[in-house]
Image (tube, rainbow, N blue to C red; front, side):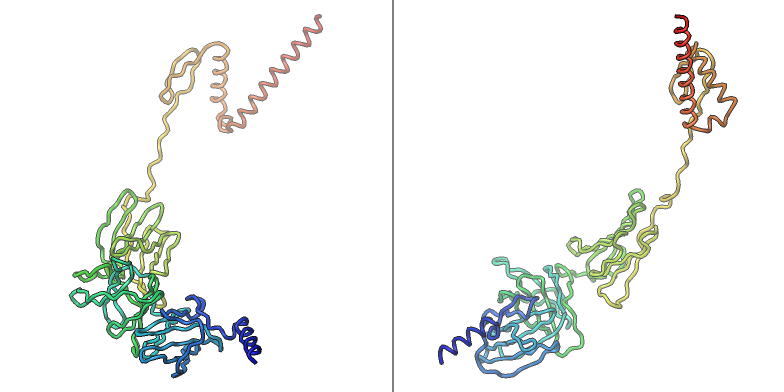
Amino acid sequence: MRTALRTALATALLTGLAITPVLATGTALAADGPAAAAENPTGTLVRTETLFDGTVVKIYKLGPVHHRAEAFVRGSSIGTIEALGRPAAAHHNGVFLVLFEDGRTLAWAGNNTPETPLGLYRLADGTVVELGRNAKDGRLGLQAVDKNGEGRGYTYTYDPVRSVWTYGKSVVVLGTGGGEFAAYVPGSNRQAAPLYLGAKVNPKPAPAAGTVLSGPTADGCTVTQKVASVFPYWTVTLTNDLKKGPKAVLKDDTGKVVATADRRHPVEERNGLKIKGAHTTTPAFGQRTQGGDTPYRWVDFPKLPKDCGKPTAAPTTPATTAPQTGTQTGTQGGQTTVVPQGGVAAGAELGSAERAADTALLASGAGVAAVVAAGLGFTALRRRAAASASAADRH
């Protein structure tokens, strides 16, 4: 009996029927708690939930502040998370699942910020938090910030993958290595990902999008101007160049380049940049904070100087002096020319006579000159052959 049971169990394990895998985020629901188990959870089953995406979650109680959740897709387990004394979270294909130590669960889709620079963020409920790093061990952490810009003290990540806190009315999930920062307000119709506000508290209100901050400054046919971005305290440098076309560079409040749009790539959807009329000398720049139907806010690129793009006057050609008969010196194009006498002079004189008599021949170009030269060569060769024949007859 024991042998048969062991054989059946071994067969089940080999085929995967009795395995509860702990898989990586992005391939299945990740088991992210510090005590995540790779075997079937033990304890008392308190309830079974079905999430909005069809995932089935079974919650087990192991103690007053110790619960475990196992998730199933089409009947197959895809992983577990365990909350012991504090909440744990899992993330799969944009869906977040939070298990609290008392057995409560919370699930939502989206509201995630994949880029997580250090600084201030505003949550959907209006709470402002600051993302920082522990100077001793490098761990990421969050602290609430009051209206005066004062921090209330950091709490640092405690989980190898992601940690969970509550700030204001928002439940926040922060990835230990960065690149993941999500928040959800239970029971609220207003949901959004944490909005980055800048590296530090700025006592001055952020200028309206499109406000000219500096410029325009011109360097030949290149004009540059800096305007305020739709993102608070960020800027956009607009450059209008006669040859290269328009270019818009989005920078954060530290001066770091975040995104660029130009003539070759006039639309940058991720950060909401767009250039209209990129192949004209009067382009316009549009920006928006979100995708979908959110309207663009437009501002003109700086205008090019008035004299840019106008044709310049054609250069004049200096007059030349026609060669004369005999030995003479003349200046042509800044050079002194000596015209010899004799046979060469006769040739030059003949050339002058031909040019005077037949203007059309001069207009026929290098092709006619080549034919004439070939004809002269043939005549000289024929005369040379005739002279040789006469000499032979005499002998």
